[in-house]
Length: 307
Image (cartoon, rainbow, N blue to C red):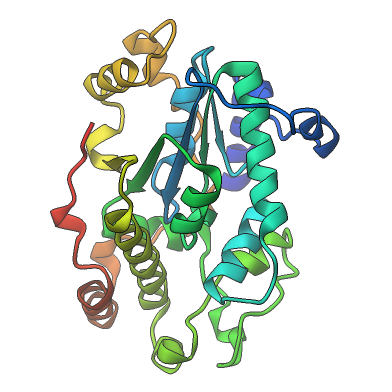
């Protein structure tokens, strides 16, 4: 019943979302029309990276609410999930057409709206090569505190069938969209045995920590591009933050405080009824959580929102 009511709510709110059509997935035939587009000094590209469950979708909507920007999030989830899969496992598959897809999308966006913000959690293991290929003016790293992130991944159903991995490799997920088969990565051989012994909380923590570790280390290496770090707890429903963002990115027709707060009208999809809060975790789960953070991503408290 909860899921049914949630779906009705999302369906209703989507009807009210006048910017949803602006961000609809374009057909490839449309994108091809922009292959000769040349980016000018008045055009800007921003790329957004994150581990997921960080407010990236909401953040893209902020850009999308201004006529001189288009903000997109997981516009091509099937291709993006496959990209992360082959990048993480270093599979011998050409990525050239995926880069071309993002470039054509950016050209189309800039032709229609002047500037484009393109984000996806599936970009997470390809920061360096995406920056090289797309040549953005700005890059963003969206984070959320580890406890709330792991709680959210758990509620979303991550690794709920992790016992089916058979201690060897990921499986094809036939329960939903095919892209889920490519999104639920598991460790390569160097950590696989230990991962298989972890609780579900431990497995999710590994994913969160490893993904953020990769983005953070790649961001530290990138030079000559403006880099922004955004912690959800700093920016969520924060109108002062929005005003700084608006000034920095020259938003046309700045939103009122009420308009800004209304950009967060749709909660990211979750599996309702599967809440499992930190205070309910047992001692083993909490120990795994702390140990994995220490091993893979001890940097969270050192990172500061810089807008």
